[in-house]
Image (cartoon, rainbow, N blue to C red; front, side, top):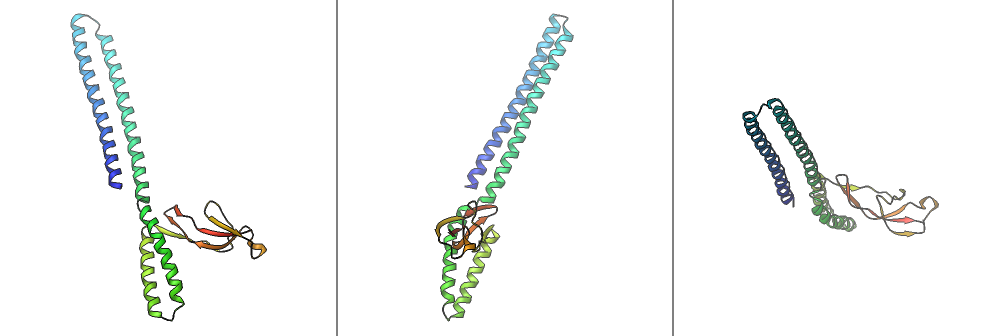
Length: 198
């Protein structure tokens, strides 16, 4: 996907470069044509001064045209580099989203293994779990820490149900966290699913 976007960006850059080169070629041709007309006009009449002024005007117009085109190209480069940075930041989003159910399964497996007496099995699964989580963390995945008793915020939490609050201080607050949420960089890729008290 990023290769496709890179090709698109390169094609757009080449297109902008072609436009600039065409504009420069066109300006050169116009100046050469004007000089030729100027020479012809000098041969035919005594209007040398006004012809020089016309040439200066035309050169100034072409210079302005070139500067506008160059500024447009610079803006384009700035915009595409910003888009490219954004793309690199979120390029792993699909893979990370696909890994979230595996992380949930690891959590459930660890909870069940802790109930058994087999300490070696628990230690082995914990090592694999830690290595897996550390690898994903190095790629930008961060768990969202949501605690019971926090105030519910619809911008960062997803309420799946409401239950009568076990105590008065839990009304409108999070009673239980059903599924952990995750961020990739600054972007939330899965909102934590919570139960709120009413």
